[in-house]
Amino acid sequence: MLDELKRRGESTPPYAVLVTDAIEISRPWMRSRCPLVLLPDAFSCNMVRARYGLGEDNAVAAGFPVREAFVPSADRLPPGADYLRIVYGAYRQTGGVLADIRGLLDTFPQLRLSVIAGRRYRMLQRYFAAYCEAGRLEVFASTTRMAELLAQSHFYVGKAGAATLFECYAAHVPVLVNFTLPGQERGNLDLLLQDGAGCHVESTAHLIATVQGMLRSGARGWLLLHAAMLQAGRSGSAARIAQAVRQKYGI
Image 1 (cartoon, one colour):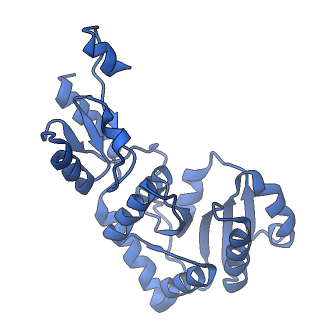
Image 2 (image 1 turned 30 degrees about the vertical axis):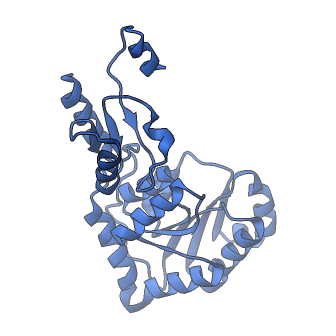
């Protein structure tokens, strides 16, 4: 709409396109003639500049903004034999979700598991009633407590959605991806693997084995992923985006 108004010579405010996919930037993002395109990472930014002939002042790697509540916990200890917290996004088919939840809870007796289940939350609460009553499992349809849950957790297990992925980056929570939507979410997974800040798990058995591996040798595997989250430097994006807009438009 703003492109069309501008083409007609109408007055338009300064505006920018904020791309929320990484690495695999689908063509519809770039149909706008907006003078400022904000990308979530440097690889995506360089690719867009080369493919669409944009200059450094037109395409900027600024990151993906998340709420300020998503911050690392100052007192979170590494996972161990007596303490393990995981947030699980139930995006797989029901059979896979049931297998993942039961496998995690049965394999790791120290685990406290929080599940974001959508419309299947009542079914999961009934199916795993004993675990819920024991305080080892909490199941939500949705939640406004995601920042709090991540701050308490060691892993996020779920799909490679950009918003959740960058919330995990901000909270320094390693991600174990067990589901991707074809297309743009594959690029988000590639970014995570490129940063060394997470893993792709292809089955319940692979998920269990990956977590077991992360807990060995004093949780050395988890510590490496956690350090990679920090090293990636993908938090603080909202401020970078605001700065890029101010510089572009002299605001």
